[in-house]
Image (cartoon, rainbow, N blue to C red; front, side, top):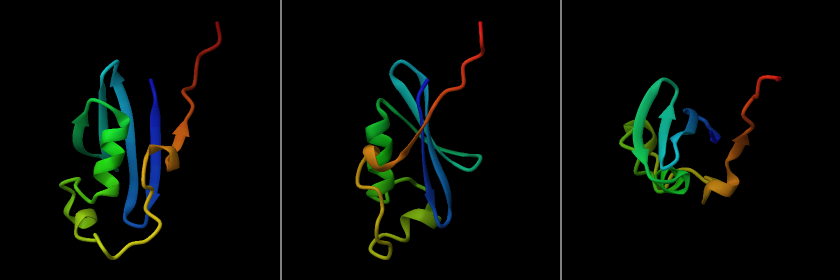
Length: 82
């Protein structure tokens, strides 16, 4: 499953793939939403539309926010040796 992270000043956002067509957006231990794609989750972060008040209120105050998923860090899944 795929995972992506974005380290913001207020915490680390993480997008986790939980099934073939389901992704979850987290900040720390708080689940912010479920999405059909990682791109949609990243778009909510860049659009300050996460329902996480501490982040969303920073709209128009922050610069260099990742505009899309390609600017997030992809986390490689660890696989156990056979």
